[in-house]
Each structure stands twice: as structure tokens, then as C-alpha cells.
Image (cartoon, rainbow, N blue to C red):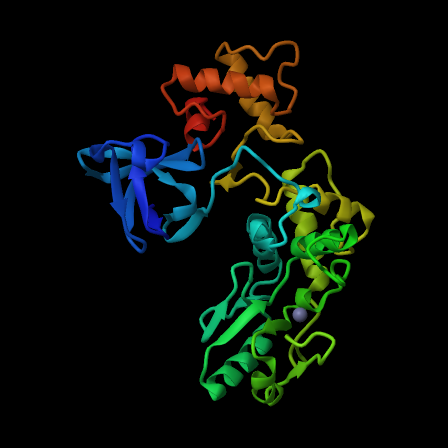
Length: 361
Ligand SMILES: [Zn+2]
């Protein structure tokens, strides 16, 4: 297996997880977006960093820290980590920003699950001549993308897209803002009824200039009630909105072993409650089939936590009166930190691949 560090934004590799301006020149190394470095191993580290061991040393050192927002880890060209676990978590119901771009972690998990249930139910159109706003998920159903491609090619100009596919998490946030009178949202549909959740709608700049090109290819302008909005009415599409709900229900169940909900694709109050209680950065990141354990609110719970606790106990680390209770709480985190310190690991209280391996799991 070839493991690589892929640089997605110009960044500085560092010897310590502090601001690079405070580091001596030999303790940092600037590197450009697009570069790839072969790795021997990697693990999550504190302050949103990933600790990597390079196959080939830089400045005589193999071990470096990389800021997780600037890099990806690739194993045989598959992305295994896009962002490390963060210590501060916000739930959907407490999300206050008017931009939904902070939800991308959760969105990514929902879209991935949809495509796992129904491969290619949503396809990216970022390869077309488009420019997308920061919160845009550039996904459409395939017939809608094909028609969009024709319209853009005929006009021969880039299209500026402000909204396309909307996950049920984004829609829930917009609905919450609407109910609370925030962000100037005049109307927001309850998930999953918005057209943007069908993978058949776009909001664009210059709607009147685009209208004749889009309408020639099966797209319909909604009109004065919502000028930027177009819907695809051509053939070959299907209703994927229940699929999005089903995908969320499955993702929830996968990560909440003690709070299983019915996964049937209907958006009832039980599902809405769980969606509101989901972390915007997504559920625990899984690496090689294991989720990265860490202290969260609510606490991570399950058989994987119990195994870590039993390994700690068997190596002489106390968990107090609670013992192996399957909950990743403060006592467990402290025992993990002590274990990491004793083994010379990064002391971050996260149970990722390295800590797991040292625990003999
Ligand atoms: Zn719209």
C-alpha cells in the first residue's frame, strides 16, 4: 500500500503545532499546493494537525506536523482523512453562521452514504465551466448535469452558481434560522422537501441571460418569486430525497450504537431530532474501519470504546469506579493521555491508528 500526503493548499510543515512565525527556520518547511509526499505512517495530532512520518527526510527530519485543512492523506490514491477530529464541536441545532459551509464534514458523510446506497445518484459538475460559491455542493443528477453542460457550452461563458445540491443538514440549518428569524431567511422548506434536495435545482447569477440557453435544454426558470432559481424538468431523473434521509439515518446508526433509529427514509420527528443533534463536522472519522475516539458531548459510546478501556485496564491504567463502561468520558480520556505520555506518543487524548496499535488493538 502506498500512503501519500497530498498538499491541497500552500502550507508549512512544522516541528511543533504552533504558529509557524514562532518557529526557527530549521523547524519549518514551506510546501506548495499540488505536491505529494510519500509517507511511512501518520496519525492525528493536537490543534487540528496531522503528524506524518515521511519516506524521504526534509531538513534531515522525517517526522513533521501538517495543518489538517491544508492536506489530505491518500492510500493507494483513496482519500482516508480530510480533517482531524476537533476538540470543539457544534451541533446542527446550535449552528449560528448564516453560511452553511461549516457543515461540509457532515454533508460529506451524507453524500458519501447516498452514493454508497445508490452509486452515482449524484454527480459532481465542477468539471464544467462553472464557478461556485464557497458553500456550494456542485452535485446534480446525471441528466441535469448533461443538460447544464449543453447550455453552458452554447453560451460559451462561465456560469456563477450560488447554490446547487443541498443536504438535509444544510436544509435543517436554513429551516432553524428561518424559525428563529435569523439571517434574513424569508422562507425555508422543511427537510427534505426543498427542490435543492432533489439534485435538480440551481441558483445562479445573471438568470435572465442564461434563461434561453437553459430552457432550451430542459431547465425551467421559477420566475419572479425566486429569480436566481432554475429546476431541471427533463427526463431520466428520479426522486432522491428519501434516499438522502435514509443515508443520514444509516450514518447516524453507524456512529450511535446505543441510539439506533429506524432507517426507512422518512423524515419524522425522531430523525429530525437526531439531525439537530449531529455534529456539523461529521461523526467520528473512521480510519481503516475504526472511528477515531475522542472526548465529545454527547460522549462517544460503543463496543470500540469498551475495547480501548479494557486494553487500558489490562496495561494497568485505572478507570476508577466506572471501569469499562463503553463511554469515552473524561476518566477514559485522562487514562489515554497518560498512556500516550508513557509511550512517547503525541498526548492528545485521541485514539487513532498509532495509539490503537500501541494498545495492542
Ligand atoms: Zn433555489
